[in-house]
Amino acid sequence: MLRSNCNHHTMPSRLASAAIFWCLLFAGCAEIPIVGRIQTSFRGDTSVNGRVAATVEGPIEIRMPTAPDPGPIVPVSVRAGQPGARIGLVDVDGIILNQNLTGLYSTGENPVSTFREKLDAIAADPSIRALVLRINTPGGSVTACDIMADELRRFRQATGKPIVVCMMDLATSGGLYLAVGGDRVIAHPTTVTGNIGALLNQYNLQDAMAQLNVRAEPIKSAPMVDIGSITAPLAPEAETMLREMVNSFRDRFRNRVAQTRRGLTAADWKLLDDGRIVSGPKAVELHLVDQIGYVHDAIDEAEKLAGTSGGEVVIFQRKGAAGRSLYSITPNTPIEGQLVPLSYPGLDRAKIPTFLYLWQPDSTLMRLGGR
Image (tube, rainbow, N blue to C red):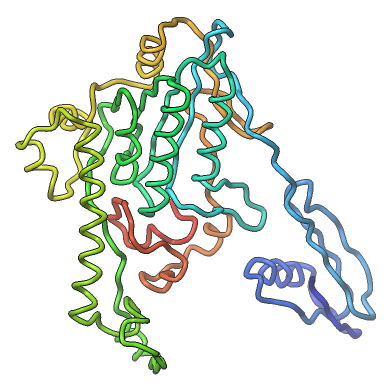
C-alpha cells in the first residue's frame, strides 16, 4: 500500500508515474510524497490497468492486485497425429533455480516446481506413450539440478514410459546432469554440452569497499560463521573446507554420469575430468550422447521406443500460453531484470545460490532472473 500527503503544488504526470513504478518495483517504499494535481495511468496486463485524474487534497492509497492463479498445466497440440498414442514434450529452458523467477508485470515459472507438475500431467495421461525432454540450459544450483534429476528418475520408475532427451543450444553442467537420465540422448550438430564439475561463486570486494570508505566489522560467535564473506579474503582453512565440498559435488556428478552412460571409457574420462565443454559431435565420440539429430529425430526415437508411430505431439504449458510449435518454451525471465540491467560481480551474491552445476563464462550471468 502506498500513501501520500498532498498540498496544492503540481507534479508532472510522468514523474508521478515513475515515482510510483520504481517504489513498487523495489518494494522498499511505503510512502511517497505526491503533491497537487495528478493525471496518470497504468499500462500493463488487464489485472493492472486503471486511470487516475484528480486534484489530491489528502492521502491517497494505491492497492496492487495479487497475481492471478495461472491455472494448471495442460497439453497443447504442436503436431497433428493419432490422438490415442501421443508423445509428450517437456521443455527445460534457462538457469535452473528452485525459486520463482518473477516480478512486477512479469510472467515466469519456478523451473523445479513446473518440471514436476509437467511430469505429473504426463504420468496421469495414459494416451501419452513416451516423453521427449527438450533441454536448453547452462545448468543451475546443485540442489535444484539434483532434485529435477531425481524427479525424472521417479517418473521413469513409476510410469515405465520411455524418455528421449533432445539437447538444444546448451546442455552443459546441470543440463547434462539432467540429460543423462534419459533412455536416449540426442544432441544437435551445434549443441554445446559437457562441463562435468561444480563451482562456488566467491568474490573478495574488500578493495572495492575501501574505495567507498566502507569497512566491515562483523561481530561473530565463531570464526567460520561468515565463511565466504565478500568483505575479506578467504582464510586458508575456509578455502580447504569449501574446496572439499565442491569436490564432493563434482564426484556426485561424475558418478551419476558414469552410472548412466556406461559406454564411457578411461580415455573419455581423461578428457572430460577437467570440466571442459564439447560440441555435439565430440560428445558422441566421447559417449556422452547417443547420436546427432534434431527434435524431430528425438520424437521418432521416442515413438520407436514406445512402439508407436504417427502420434500427436503435445507440449505441456499453462492454459493460454502461446504453445504453437515444437520449440515453444516456458518463460522464466522477469521484466525488471531488463529494466535494471546493472550488475557488479559479487554485489548480487546474496541473491544467488552458492554451489553450482553451471557453465558460467560470464560472472554476471547469475543475476537473479538472468539467462
